Length: 416
RNA sequence: GGAGGGGUGGCAGAGCGGUCAAAUGCAACGGACUGUAAAUCCGUCGACUUUCGUCUACGAUGGUUCGAAUCCAUCCCCCUCCA
Image (cartoon, rainbow, N blue to C red; front, side, top):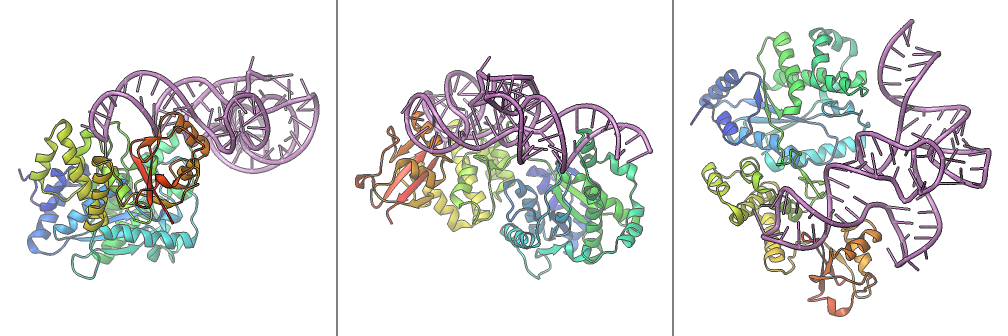
């Protein structure tokens, strides 16, 4: 069963994190050596502070780092304070808007928060550490950079990189600024190698070009072999990227998404994805996962509940996961109203259209009207038929009324 | 700087003076069927009011016309080729 010498790579393979490695054999030898000697390997995961929270789509590499740390290695989390000022062209058609200093600072705080849910930070040997490439880029001299780094890059080669090639093929503009992105990423890798002895970079497969930029620079400039390791892009059965729920991103930080909604995202995963998600989004042992994913038909719902609970536990803590679960059970299995549902305050006399608008379930009254015609809106589980209905005292039970849109979205109106 | 092409709803992409709130596809949403799944089928998909209707929208600003996404002018942005 054990195909690799290193514990880390075996876990990656077994749980479906393994997509591509710059030198599988070499990386395995290196990690095995570290694991044997008890000297942690250092690896990094980069992310640009373009938002103030990571979302489900970012979890894959985060979980890889989590395992990396569990295997006795040291994770570095790099935030691209400098590179965000440029914008990664990978997979995009347009230049990203520039971010103000305040927004960047705010985003970096948010990112650290996201990271810390999955990794243990601190000063210990295997504790995660946060670094910002702005620290080494902000004072860099252009000519010195061109001479020291630019000489190692061939434009011919750069033009063949996916991030550049696709942009050109699609006849979308690419600025010189963006063209330089891969040099900066390459430089990051080498900088971390110099500073922390970091020899591994872990990322999603869309970062392959940027990773090899770093490993090649390391080889040419420092004569050292750096390793890159990527995860596959996780898609659902329709081939779409994971991480969107009702058109909105599933955020990791609690200010952006409630634990209940986070829980529901995983609870509603497709049957075909259950095994894959258990491996990737939970810490459950493989034996347990194999048992769960073998469940069929209705029974697979048990696996989904466990998946949702475990995934929420990692990200939001056990307490929150339990509350979310209770709310889900009450709401869906017992037809009652769980306490963790989204809520607004309102009292009798409140128009039913306004109630849904305030709850954020609809974007306009017109939409609410349409949904009423389609039997899509409910008050205390009874379909609403009159769009001019106003809440009455009898609608409130124990000081709250339940309103629902469709089968999945439920919320509470509480008396003030 | 020169020549040509183009900017349409979340995306893709028709329309090229009235019948255009704008085809079609995707996405999204509601209903039916189910298992808080998938697939399928039906329906919805600018806002306000719902009955008529009103308003805001086709890069921006002006103009021509009874009437413009559609014509004209100026400006902005993008693409291709040339310098």
